[in-house]
Amino acid sequence: MKAPSFSSVQAAAERLRGVAHRTPVLTSRTLDELVGSSVFLKCENFQRMGAFKFRGAYNRIVQLDAQARARGVVAFSSGNHAQGVALACKLLGIPATIVMPSDAPASKTAATRDLGAEIVTYDRHKSHRAEIAQELCKGGATLVPPFDDPEIVAGAGTAALELLADVPDIDVIVTPVGGGGLLSGTALAAHGINSAIDLHGVEPEAGNDFQQSLERGEIVQTDVPKTIADGLQTTAPGEITFPIVRSHVKSIVTVSDGQLCEAMRFAFERMKIVIEPSGAAALAAVMQRKLPAQGKRIGIVISGGNIDAGRFASLTA
Image 1 (cartoon, rainbow, N blue to C red):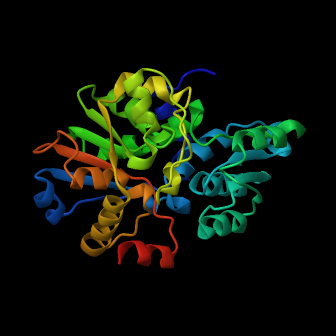
Image 2: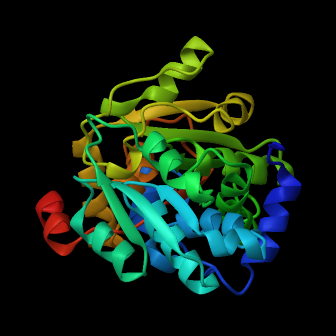
Image 3: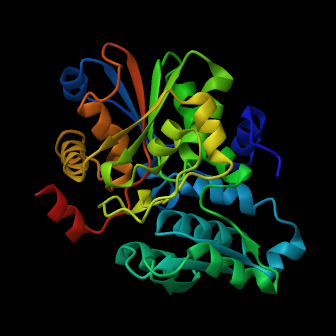
């Protein structure tokens, strides 16, 4: 596969024009005072289906030819990519089958099913989702992975293109990182515009496979992490995303589940927005001053807001 580039992010932006929402960039005086910086939140929780994942899924699937579309699409995901693929397929009239863990949030499973996708469940601690998906593709369906695909990466990077168009003088961009699709796409977009921008990724403390991989200079495989950030429960960086992050990103830092809850609570109480635990990772790191960014202009990607009311209430109480 051809490696993604700045030009592929730009091409993705054209495909998504008029299809994906141009999500708002929000600010908070209280947040700026708290962290000693000017902070700009790119709110992908307001994206279609509630997360940035729609960008990559649609960019990948819309390029399928008529024969591939007729054979359908298979994806694996704990929730947001599942919904992104399901929505893209619904818009394009393509059959979709999604492999989801049996412990995925019920709201994400229900939303994926409501969008018309067929769901195949598995035990994430006993089975390998990619192997199940590959088996399902033997009938000719196209596999659409959640992050390790050039067009998925390019689509994810379009959020940073919009952020920098709205706030051109940003010094630092921080994103959550699971498999690295969002962070690598953001890196390509940001450094295609301004190579001086510092880039940082944020993982849960319990699942720092990307941090370990960068420290060792090779992809490290870990166990499924026990964290409330279900969208960041990856076990290894991607073959495509890892070299991009290694070349472009200044650091990967971690946050605790408690710090994720604190960031969710702040966003709700002070900014009146709902974000899920995974989507709060970058905000949590900035609030905890885990990055060398004080006094700088910081862009944060809020990656998603898909969480049911009861779960949100329990985590932010």
